[in-house]
Image 1 (cartoon, rainbow, N blue to C red):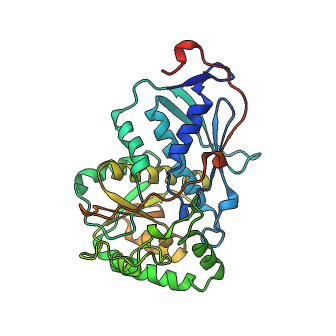
Image 2: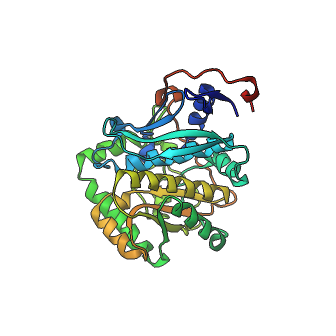
Image 3: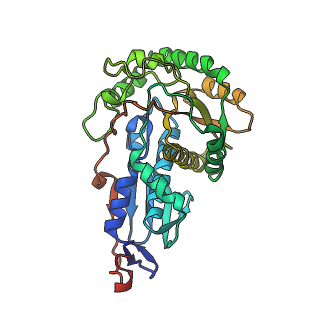
Length: 345
């Protein structure tokens, strides 16, 4: 743990540590890999902002998924800082002067974080979105209570959908794809961000399923098809489908949904399971209404997640690109050098 003395004498990570941790945490998932987050460190606190310029106004007109993506990044940041000996206190308070500010982080040294933190932090770099068919998740009954607890820590409900609803959701996925295919702006956004990449953002074609591969999954967004390959062509998808629901629709709640999503994805990765976040079903009111009738707990469905076991010889999707840390982090203010006994602890 490397630290400086903040402007009020409180230990804080030094700028080099801030930069390194934000760069690692930027592996967080986001809608179409838009990476719509900005960070600013003022020498004492680390601020998270929503990058409104990266909002997909047709796909995500309210900015809900943008904020959920930022919430996932927030949890990733907290996880990697904890692994490096820093406890993070989060302020989820709106600021009328800065409406795009979603959270502020204050730091405290943490000499003995739980052992589970290290595994979650390692999962940050290994997690991938897997859009191909998966087997049933191994150890599901034992894992599920822990996943529910991770979501509940953010005041988010996690419900497991019954297997009988899969055909309905697959049909809805196709119906929504047809409906939205007539929306020129949605189609433009989809093809701008998916199927090609400039090396820093978006979903490269190699991370997308071919038409045949997607047909074996059925539930999910219809993307431009990936390369003609036949990965996992011997079985249909048996991943479990879970829904994350919030108590209300609001920016602070959406941030918490993103944090819960991050925690669930990392927890599954630690358990050796693959995941795929699905937001197409919750983008339109009809999809959210259908999901509401499929879950037993009260709440507003926000995200569906596929969770399953990849085959032992599975094709592992390559990591999707990320923006340079200099594009997402600004260092302002000055912190005094740390005294010798706080250097490199």
